[in-house]
Length: 266
Ligand SMILES: NC(=O)c1ccc[n+]([C@@H]2O[C@H](COP(=O)([O-])OP(=O)(O)OC[C@H]3O[C@@H](n4cnc5c(N)ncnc54)[C@H](O)[C@@H]3O)[C@@H](O)[C@H]2O)c1
Image (tube, rainbow, N blue to C red):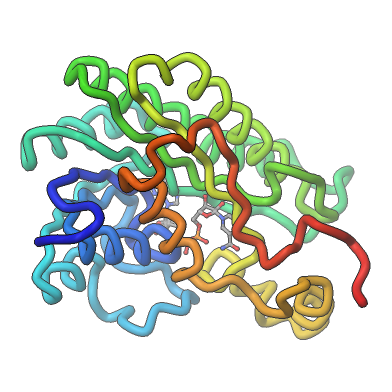
């Protein structure tokens, strides 16, 4: 397949639903061979997928692309190790590690959150990304010709938000993990960047989307006056995964309709 990612091999974690799924389909359309790593093969319930009756791999293959599924819990080190090994076994190498899998906990003030909720966000969002980065960097170093890490962070990693402190704490750590890696491995040609969306329409935010008060408050506060779409994130992800972004490194790029510019509305 010709395209902006022709010949590249990409792992995307959490790619059965939401951003990961949209990015997997987009990457394959651009010629990448995609390894979908997720807890489950079917999309999460409550999402906005128009094609929810099909798995990501089925979608990609139906469009003539190449993809395989590997069950993977990113919190489990041996499973992440096996995910990288699967990519190499199936497609010969790894070019792009996209650490996208993540969970959300919100709707409470700081003093109301439980330690379990903090632990859940920390384990999936931080430790999961840590595992993916470590295994990918090791593979990239063994290959000896660079590599590309993309971490799905959030504007929650760049600022505070009310009623989701455990999530913001984990995203802040993920953002700094991205910066640290960029400093340590840039000289080996291993690029590391983060994508920082605001609220976008996926299963993860379905309850917020369905909350009419939140919906109108949020939409009014965004200069572009709309929720993010999966395609908004996929378009940036393709650019970061491609050689077009070859001098962009250690960046945390906002895809937020202007959310982080100002708290006030005109
Ligand atoms: N949707 C938003 O508004 C938004 C905004 C900013 C950042 N994010 C981030 O984007 C990423 C993707 O979220 P989404 O909105 O597409 O959510 P989603 O719920 O639609 O998809 C998440 C996917 O990750 C998988 N997953 C969850 N835990 C996993 C684990 N331990 N191991 C492997 N896979 C796991 C799920 O099965 C699911 O397929 C997350 O890191 C999230 O924090 C989302």
